[in-house]
Length: 147
Image 1 (tube, rainbow, N blue to C red):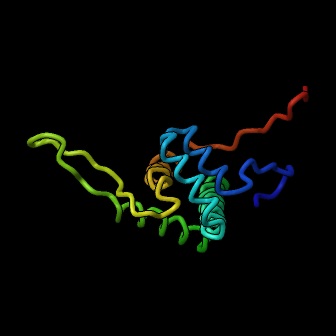
Image 2: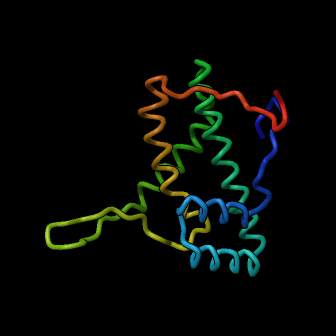
């Protein structure tokens, strides 16, 4: 977990990650329902997926934070982020939408975190563009009720 300020994590388990993904339209309600049911049937698999989602989130956080602070990216964090991005790129496929027209899509392979692949691709773009051009900063958190 992140240090400083006693952050409160709103993700307590795999269902919370599914809910978050549904709220961001990474998955639709039908897929969310399927994943909730799968998590109930296979709690160990869901717990492992949750652990991996948090590991990826924290690695990306650490890599971005190191860049903002002018430090070298942590090797372990960068390795996790690179593997996540590589997995997403390896699952990217083009399909024909009309003669001479194509669209890229990320294949669904049963991985409980496949819906995070677009996030990995966004992270790659963020690191290459906004972070590399010093456009990302840390915002102060405000406490509810504080002046």
